[in-house]
Image (cartoon, rainbow, N blue to C red):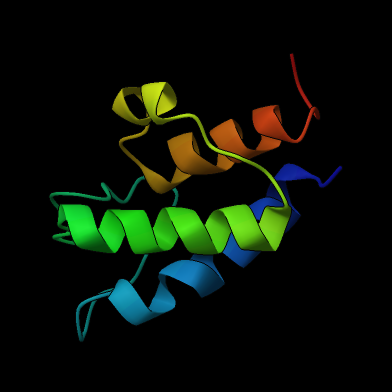
Amino acid sequence: MQEYENILQLLNEILKPYIPQGHSVSEDTDLISDLGLDSLKVMKILESVEDQFDISIPLNVLPDVRTVKDFALQIQKLNGDIG
């Protein structure tokens, strides 16, 4: 189990290669419109997150993930840290 802040920090490290030059990432960063992620990049990120956190992310949760914060909360939930 990992706390939200730790998850957020690790998630930011995973996202770092996908951040456009000159941009920064915050909790409110929209993964699609702000980072311009396409489906291939999203799948690569999901694979990295699953490996890093030793979880399996069901594809049905993806529509609920728009921002970095949404993603971190979903990871926390899958880790069993919150209801």
